[in-house]
Length: 243
Image (cartoon, rainbow, N blue to C red):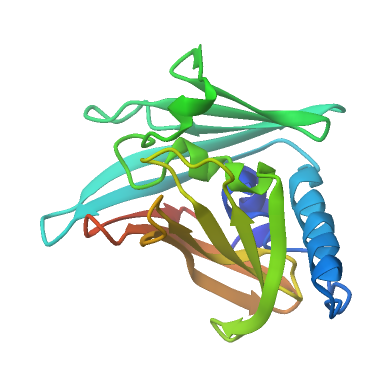
């Protein structure tokens, strides 16, 4: 029997933002101020969710550049939680070509802390790939949710789900960074199922997607997530070893 998504999502909490959710949210207010306030509450909720217990999970990171053959890398996830914070570890140390170990420490009272191969990263270093994949360290930490400008711009159906579209705007984007990110947040589960990231010229750069998600009874099942770089024609997927 497959592991419920609430167990898997705890290990990739920073990326899929609590896909199991807590039920329906309130209707969107009609005014722009109302949408901004609603967005702030939504972001606060996503960032404050702490896993209930420690977890470990294995999977595979697959990288494909254009039409070339793919590279498959063993990947481990570990989550540790305490009364004040929690951490998620992404570990490809078993790989000969792309050994890496990223630890993201979360706290509801402060911004994220990043440790990569034993060294704490500075903010400008987050725009770099994890294990040579299309997942930036920035992406795995959902850093765009910490930007000051957040607003809900519409509701829209995606992947058969009714979603709120959250726009996160970077006030001072560097040339290589995102200028804004659109996130499709499932109204029922309050979880991220799709995201689009735009470059400094406001051109679509990357797209994140939950590729395999289904509901069995009252529990959600997750098998695969994907990050595509539209400008380099490359993609990276994370497949979860769920029994």
